[in-house]
Image (cartoon, rainbow, N blue to C red; front, side, top):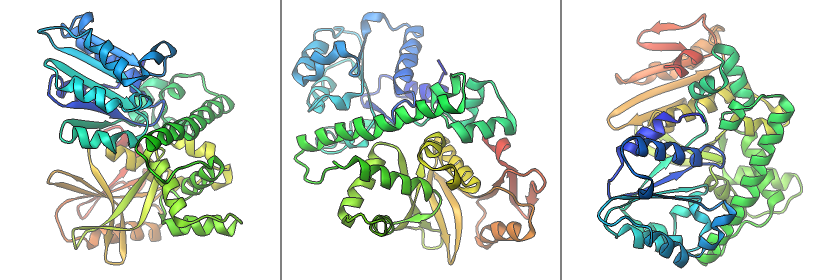
Length: 405
């Protein structure tokens, strides 16, 4: 197993705190493995086996516990009186009305509850109402470049090429890869996310009496293909609708909006809002959408649609998320900064480009950063090693070196 050290440390930081820990992320990014690793960490810290209750709802033997009453009774009977009981419920969104069982367990003394789910819709509706202020969300992503290198035993530019081609799903990193094997595995993940997670979402919506539903898988895949091809470019509901209509598909903007939301809730795509650097406010029009894993992007898109610049921009966005930043697209007058990364009182600006060696590219990437009149860190990330250095306080760093920091 690839040890996800950063996530384990975050969970340990919340150990025994009276909040429910909710680990979310796309299927096969390593949530179940993380729970097992964290349970091992608890055992190493003196927690006994009887204090750990772990249930994975993707395992058939746990099917009788899909009824929330049965689940509650099962766990209640195993609570350790006078000692902390650590409760792990994996893929909890499969249990209709699970929030009622979780809420009842939460109010018991000496319970420490951990949930995982593959759809953000689990954090809406009744759960948000019942557990407001009682849970923290830990968003889990596929492997970082550094984790991929350790798992696959590779380094440097060759490792980055492999990472961009195959993505960071943990099993991909560890397997004996060929392009056909990797693509077959990614196809399985993609179809599972698109079909099974959407079904889970539908069941959840029906339980919440929601009206707008996703039922057309072919339409969903068409929208996913458009979003994957538009990584790094401004995308609106209208632009997606126009694309579909131009291809002969009659579809309303409301339907497109709901299908895009389904892809976001399944953690396949992450929308990023623009931020007015001067006005210090979010601009909700023309978001950019990034895909959680480049291996999935390469599976979805024909090879002719591949774009190196947008691929490395995608990598940088998720790396900034992993490092704990809130990330937006920067707008400074008519100019754009690829990313404005904020963490508490810290702000950093990033431009991303495949190469800075051409004078016109160098000037294009530096101009927006030079225009910003503050003293926060400004960085350009590039694949080339010829233009690296410090230019009047603006750092130009090789991407591989930065990812390894």
